[in-house]
Image (cartoon, rainbow, N blue to C red):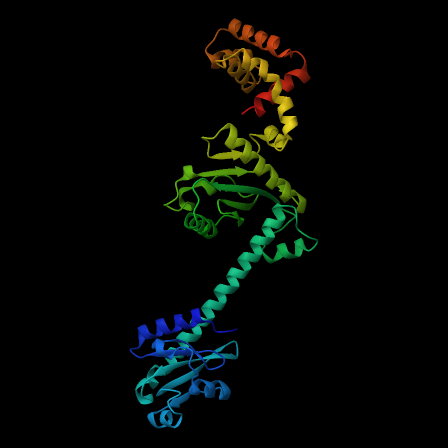
Length: 366
C-alpha cells in the first residue's frame, strides 16, 4: 500500500474540519504530500522520518524544532498503519500539550480513510474484473478456466441464463452511471457489464420470476431517465458456457431487427422475433436476393396497397377472414389483391417454398 496525494489530501481536509489546527501528511519517505499549509508541500519532514524509522509517535516542541533547524515545526507526528504495515505519517502542527488530545482522533481518522480507499479500490478492481469476464462470456471468448472464474462471482454456468441488452438512445456518462447504480442496487438475480457508452449487457437467471418485467419497473429507473429513452432486448434462455454467447447473439439480433421494424416499441423479445432474429446477419447479396422479389410489386404499387395487404396476410397467419377484417375490405377484394401479387412476383401462395420466400421478403424488407 502506497499513500498517494489524493488520499493524503482527503485526510488533511477531513481532519482539519474536526480540529482547528494545520495537518500534514507525509509519505513513506517522510516527504510532505498534503498539508494545511501549501508552502510546506514537497519538504522533507524530520519528525516524520524519525516516526517511520522508530515506528512511534514523535512530539516536537519549540526547542527540538530549533535544534533541527526548523526542518519540522512544533507538533505531534503519528505513524499511519494498515494491516500491520506503516506507510505514512500524519502530523498536527502546534504546541504538543495543546494538540495531544487530538492526536489519536486524527490518527484514527487517517487510518479509516485509508482503509475506506483500499476497500473501494478492491471493489473497483473486482467490478472491473467481473465486467471483463462477463464480456468474454457473452462474446464467446471465455477460456478453459471460465467455470472457476464464474464461481468467484456466484455464477453457476450449469443454470440457464438470459442475456438482456439495454440500449440508451440519449446516453451520457452520468445517465449510464445512474442506470448501472440503480440496477446494481436492485434485488434482481442479475450480473451486468457496461459494453459501450450507450449499452449495458445483463446476465439474468432464466428461472427468475423478474425476468423481463422488473427490469422495466419504475423503481429501478433513475428519475432522470425517461423509459422511452431505452431499448431493451431479451435473448433466448440458454445454459452452459457456449449457451450464454448464443443468448447474447439472439438478444443482439432481436434488438437490431426490433429497432428496424418496430422503432416505437421499447422492449423486444427473442420469442416474438425468432425467425427474423435468426436471419439477422445475412450477407448483402443474400439480403438483396431475397428482397428482390418484391421489386415488381413496388414498381406497380406506388401507394403500397398490395404490399400492406401482403404484410397483413402474413401477420394474420394467412387467414383470409382475419386479413380482410384487419384491412377493412371484402374477402373478394382480398382474393383479387393476392392474385395480383402472384402475377407481379410470379410466385404462388400454393407452393410452400415460394410462399415462404414472400414471407421472408416481407420480414427483411425495411
